[in-house]
Length: 326
Image 1 (cartoon, rainbow, N blue to C red):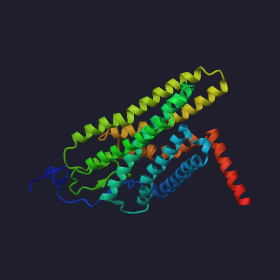
Image 2 (image 1 turned 90 degrees about the vertical axis):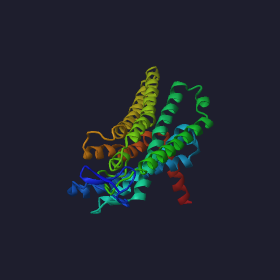
Image 3 (image 1 turned 60 degrees about the horizontal axis):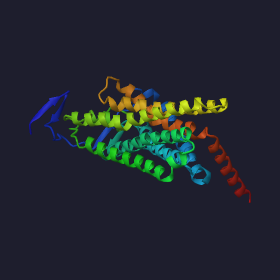
Image 4 (image 1 turned 135 degrees about the vertical axis):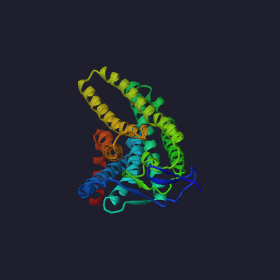
């Protein structure tokens, strides 16, 4: 079999593997071994708070019938996505921080990338749908029940989940169809598309064109729609007669936009520039922004600061206490 050598390691002729890859090595933060103990503790706390915060939102909305309206049902779906997204990434990072050789099987890497793309893509579309819901509620309050009826809500939620599944299926299958030729060190925290793609020993130009186009459609288009929705919302807020109402609405919009910008901004940098000039450590830190911080902040930004959610939590807690006293 004819061989050629590229970048210091032997690569098989295009389309053929020189040796099968049964596992990958995630380098993670191996260059900072003295910090891995502290990072383990910090990531563990972030993960637990993320799970607890989002689980509270899912449970409270499920139990309180008064919250069964589109705004909160969107939040419930978002919380499920955030818990799942974080669970697809953080446990693997925690395991890798406690082992000398952070290995992940070929199938495990495939599965992790699939679920990252599934929940990440669904997250993008859900955030867009939530912005549209708030736009309809604030800018068209009288016609809101018609604009956001049960059928429209179900279509938006279904579209978000189905789109995430389609993106994950196409992209993950495509990436892992490339030959890796025995080179298996992934200089990243988890099996994300750009660092895995760097190991492919064949021309990936067509996939990069697809990934760039897909990122624009999946990430930037919803982000622009969110910005447009909130711009319209801000103009509507400025026309409100109540100063207190304006301040509350401005605070909510600013919080939402902070979370959205954090998620979309870092994700866009990662996926729009798969071979960017950022150092590997910089890429790892940017990936932490949307994989750890956004799922952590969303419960506080979207729900736990919400008066209705707080009332529902207190009501459910009081009901539970009353049942124990009987």
